[in-house]
Amino acid sequence: MRFRTLGKGGPKVSLVGLGFWEAGGRAWKSPKGNWIIEVVKKAIEMEINFFDTAEIYGFGNSERLLGEALKRLNVKDDVIVASKVGGFRFYEGLIIKGIKAINRRLARTVDLIQAHWPPPAWMPLCKAIRGLEEAVLNGLAHYYGLSNYPADLVERVLECSKRVEPISNQVQYSLAYRTPENELKPLLKKQELSLIAWSPLAKGALAGILSPKDPAQRSDRIFMTAVKDRKLQEALKTVAEKLNTSKAIIALSWLIQKGAIPIPGTRKVNRVAEIASAADLEISDDLIKMLDDASKQYVTRWGRKYKVLQWLRYVPCSIQYLSLLITRGA
Image 1 (spheres, rainbow, N blue to C red):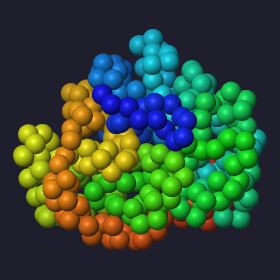
Image 2 (cartoon, rainbow, N blue to C red; image 1 turned 180 degrees about the vertical axis):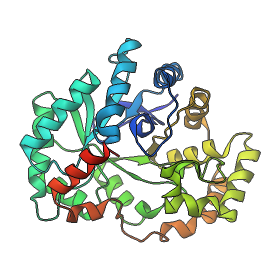
Image 3 (cartoon, helix red, strand yellow; image 1 turned 90 degrees about the vertical axis):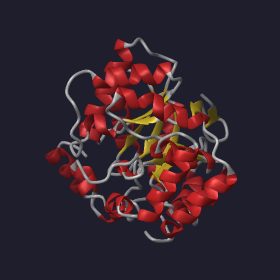
Image 4 (cartoon, helix red, strand yellow; image 1 turned 60 degrees about the vertical axis):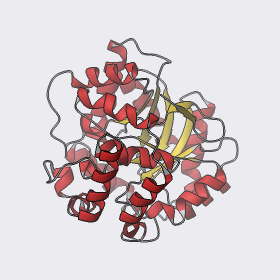
């Protein structure tokens, strides 16, 4: 396994991590039993040390299950655990309260706390950043980062940062969604912020799945588009056959070679070793170009500016929270 430092001076994380939305998310049909313990155990065996979750995943259930798994396996400082506070926490007090609850569910101090999406457009952004800074300065988190922040808001965050700077921005990025390459990715590179890629396999569309199996896939236009994209699927198949591996590993390795840290999710223990192998695969320049050419429409297909979850900026915080309360999380 190879590792990379997050940001200018953050922790060293494996080049591929694991996302745990599937552990608590209502949109996924998660298997019963202790599968998360087995997945975490196998990940550690494969030297994957970066695990990501969020307070809204199953309304804290994902964090709780991950925390229990780490406790059962007696894992302490061997891993870097990232979580997120929702954008409805728009000022210091609410953010601190949310992070304290996250730490209780994880039964540990979160290593990287991220702002899951920006606060409402009419709220002062700097107040949210102050809360993240205070969390780090008071030992409630070791580092802080952003999530789903477009380029213009990343610049504003850096202007707000007074005592502690963010180390990362977690955004949607894959062969089927390359919008971050237009403005966001160049800015992150310039400012030395790491790009963490969520949905790196487009919910399975880049891993060989041919039709939707879960509500999360059926409702995702990127998934539905990518599974039907014959040019992209053929390119993935060709490169995978040339390198004697799977489509999923090619899609993850492509991201790694683009400088991102992908965090795919899985509910299957036997896929963890496969995911880990993506960190060690080197794709030649000519094959990277083949993938680039096959997916070039997705640089602008979904827009030139990153807008994922930006509609939430126009929803009052109380409505955001009540919606999550009623649905028991995302």
